[in-house]
View 1 (spheres, rainbow, N blue to C red):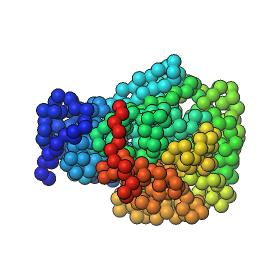
View 2: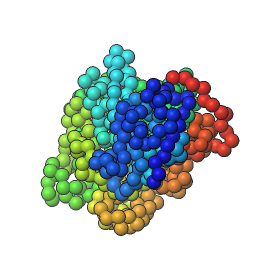
View 3: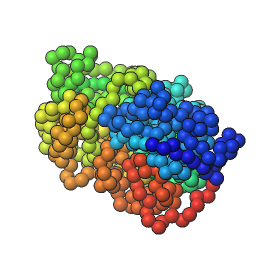
View 4: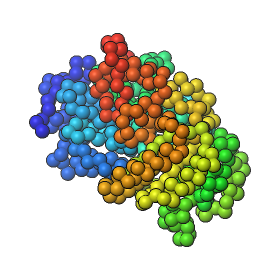
Length: 488
Ligand SMILES: Cc1cc2nc3c(=O)[nH]c(=O)nc-3n(C[C@H](O)[C@H](O)[C@H](O)COP(=O)(O)OP(=O)(O)OC[C@H]3O[C@@H](n4cnc5c(N)ncnc54)[C@H](O)[C@@H]3O)c2cc1C
């Protein structure tokens, strides 16, 4: 591929070094940026292009790791001026492979990990290269937390922009319900501060609308006192009765308690007796964010649903809810198919279907993940943010991980059949759990009025759809009202 050249955008916050380069090529980026610039001839290239999920073998022209918002703006302008596809990466956990691109530019935020915590105000400014786990550990030093998801290595960039459903979801809402402000580099290279007073339309859109509107370089979050929780894993045998009972208890539980239940054949985990390996179980993680005694009382009924096969639920420091990660870039890059849906309930037919489909699976790992919502999430009006599925009681994700690419079709068919058995027609979707599933599924993440408003805001902030390597919301045609006024 010929080396692209670019003219830096006129409205960038340019440094003297930027200004010296009226026309630069990708290799010249090394002179302009202090962050890493990785090209195919670098030894670090293969590791740098890899993302969490396997099965994505794209070869970007360059991977850039900016160190501040001005460098982010330079990279955005490089993409705009060259026409090279831009992929934005925070933690690299996109299920659709959106954080890598073939022949384009990867803007990898992982070098931007500053976290400024104000313990008095209980707020934090976080650069978007942080992972959920790192943020949680550092905030815990003050006995404070913001809720993200169930996995520490997920980037705060992707999870926040899509909503954020995790262990504090019932007590403190989605991650976006705790987002107070953000700094965003737009397609035009402007750095905007957005909150409910400044660019309120953009602030609305980035709370659920994903990476469509710009590159978020910093988020300001609200923190909550969450120090010791009653939490951990409870493993129960999975029968239709126990699954139904679990969901009923989780729904009726005090909202301090959030649960994530993975129904799956038991993996050979060291804390599970060998005779249970391969048996269908509920591997549930419980998290009670409140008084320890009340937490013990809240989890007690779950222990009585059936004789637990393992019970690791105990008072623990909140960050321990995230098990230690493998060293960065090592080992596990699963390949899989997944279907996400919001449901109002799981009746007896549905819990039977869960057991039947999982028992029939031929995948090395097959799972139905059940997350009861409600609580603080449901109290936010549906139209307040771009995440509109507030009234849904339950999120269900069904997934199969597999090792051989030739198994993709069989596993996709299994996921399709399984999902069809659980939903009545096309259920709404959670954007952060969408794979590369096409426009109709993206629409399923956004009910009509939400979609229309997002498309109009997209037309205003990104009329040429520069940010399209995402769960894309194309700009409404002819809706752009020109330049976005600059406020940083
Ligand atoms: C193992 C695993 C567990 C998960 N658990 C949960 C969970 O419990 N709860 C939950 O809500 N979700 C969960 N998710 C889904 C997760 O929220 C999404 O995959 C999310 O997009 C990942 O964010 P990331 O920054 O790591 O990914 P990336 O691949 O880096 O980013 C995904 C997309 O987000 C956009 N993006 C990322 N950062 C920025 C930024 N700073 N500015 C603009 N756009 C950006 C880009 O469009 C990018 O393509 C999980 C995913 C995985 C793989």
